[in-house]
Image (cartoon, rainbow, N blue to C red; front, side, top):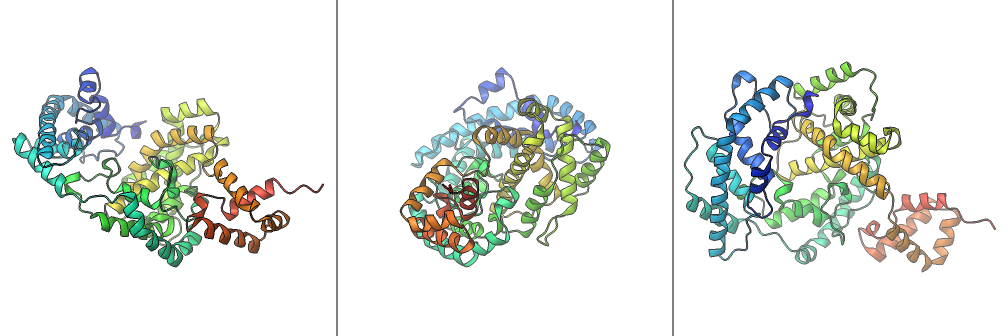
Length: 462
């Protein structure tokens, strides 16, 4: 369908083939995502013909006529894009050489994004601004030397763990009760761990991502849209900011963002829409009119209805949706996983907006986030969760550690199996908190999980 095409997808397709694959090979210093966004995207948007409508955003869905105009423009600008990339390759090599002269450790991959941003800015002019390769390389190296230094995990922990424990006791526990992540499929109803032993390079974590993992996102080029040389956060400032944000509802500061998450989680997941035309009308109206999102802490009904319409259209038209249904069967057996995936991917986008201190999200921000989540994130998540188990199911490791903890306190274990009421569960939680600290649920089952496990496997009456 028309809404499945974006300027980004058109550029990604145009910059394909053996010649481009060689340019984008591993370690070349010209990363595909950086070139598409910062070089090709800027060149095309800067030369957009107003008669074809407003300049499209990189990831905003395009109407059929707009997509045709964009495709024609991209084809005509391919030589300019290629010329810009050739200059970028020289700049990134000069930047690495200059960084080495300054005693900095920097690879071609490290400087791909800032070099693409700088060259893309020059080539957005018509005709392109001239580029002093050596001079620009030195500027990028010096900018890297001035950038904030991320704290290492041990230093981060030594400095901010106590702050997190204090703020969680003062604010986090109340926020968790008011905005339970499990209710919307965003994570466990528990304090996020301060640091995690597992790999956290996955958006599937949701609010189970550790405080350290959230802090690291400030320094990952793939997790932000602003260019490295323009990044203004200080390492210590990010730390305090992220500790505080983690203790807010859903780990987000903006009330609007919490409303957006609850609204999307409430939307129905229907793979067999009765009225496709009606879904088109609802979605297009919400997308095109630039709606603000409510801030009253409940749900935004317009967003709920629009999300349901978007999901219905996706199942009706999109190839990834059809492939997912073909692989896993009717959506009736995993519709909750679709909703959970949308919520978790949206959370990553809203968290990025807050990290970059952008204005609260509107429909213009949520629209491309939902679009990208449906076509890429949802199929990935559903496949993973169906293969490995529910996104919220406790792991065998946490169950085993819980068993070990209770075996060392047999009287409590007996009372739990006899009658796992609120007081007994609270006693268990306090024991676990003393043993494992604030983020005790990273190690053992939380109260709800333990009660559910006991209810499924009651003590034998024999």
